[in-house]
Every structure is written in structure tokens, then in C-alpha cells.
Image 1: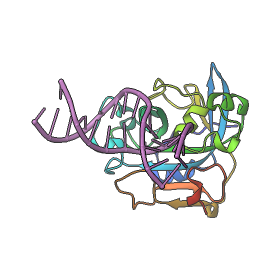
Image 2 (image 1 turned 120 degrees about the horizontal axis):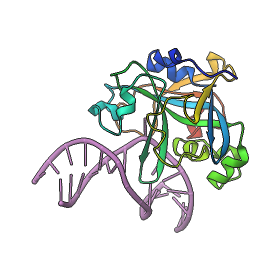
Image 3 (image 1 turned 30 degrees about the horizontal axis):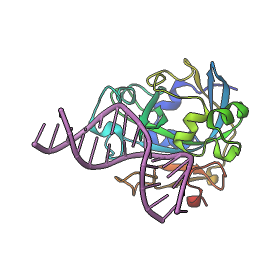
Length: 196
DNA sequence: TGAGTGATTGACT
DNA sequence: GTCAATCACTCAT
């Protein structure tokens, strides 16, 4: 499988968020090889009150302000690590949150990481996705995709009619924007009651 | 220097 | 359905 070129991430963030649906996310770590097809994303812009980059560049959000094609990993709720793909040109704080994936390779490894057996429950949420892939700290934040242990590859084509745009989940600001994308009827997306 | 909040999850009633 | 977990960050003293 071929990795995605850097111009993939240079497009508008909403386009990248939609295009990431169906791509394959791979993590080759000392703990093992694991991968999954991305089935749910959310876009975050700099002039977006729900985005970390809204309040400007800080040590934590610095990767969001670099050129697209890097990772942004952060810790929240005192327990969860979240994985984002940085988009846009350097100097603009934009990115795409990876919310859910359909496990492909390394499923036994993911089950061990997550301590669950149901594959639908391995990566159907942003915290779960990072845990399943073996991301237990923020050391990957700011790293360049495909030049670190995280890779993004071309995967299966998803028909445009099966990619749904809807409001984002779990935020209190700018909730009206339809900046969440997911695969219609996929059993691997988070908050499945919103699926249709 | 301290209170409040959060791009959630899982355990429990 | 409710709620605790637990820490980085922001904003207000």
C-alpha cells in the first residue's frame, strides 16, 4: 500500500477531514504492528472556538501551527490521549481529529491494549482509537507522518454518498457546524445512535 | 496560586 | 440514566 503524499494535507481542512475517511492508519511500535481504516473524523479550524488553536500558539498546540502532515497528540480528561492530523500551511492552526477506526491488522495487539474482545469496541471513539494503537503518551505529537512510527496509507474507496457530514460531538462551542464525517451505517463509529 | 473546564470513557444504579 | 476519574490548560485573582 502507498503512503499519502504531503500535498494530501495541504488542502482545506474540511476536504482533508472528508478525504481521510477510508484511509488506513498504521502504528508500528515496539509493542507491535496495528492498523485500521478511518471511519470517523472531525475538522478543527483556527477561528473555531471549539479548537485548541483558537486561543493561539502554545507549547501544547504548537504542532497544529506547523505545515500539514504532522501529528498532534494531546492528553485530556485526566485519562485519554487523542490523535489528530495537522492540516493546512505553516502558521495556521488547523487539524483533523481521528475519532474512530475499523481494526484491520494487529487485532490481537489492540485487544490486549484495550482489554476488550469485541472488535467493534476497539477503536470506536477518540480515546479508544489511541489506546488500541498503543499510544500511551504525547511523545508522537509534532512528529511527521510516514517519517515516524505512524503511517497513513491509501485504503479502500468509500462512495461519496456513504460519507455523511454532521455536527460535531462532545463540544460546547460551535456545535452547529457540520464538521464531523463518518461512514454511513458503519458499526465502528462512535456514538452509534447518531449513525444513519 | 487556585478554581473551573474539557474534541471522553467506563462503572454503576 | 448518573457520575467519578484525574491532569493540562486557561483565566481570574
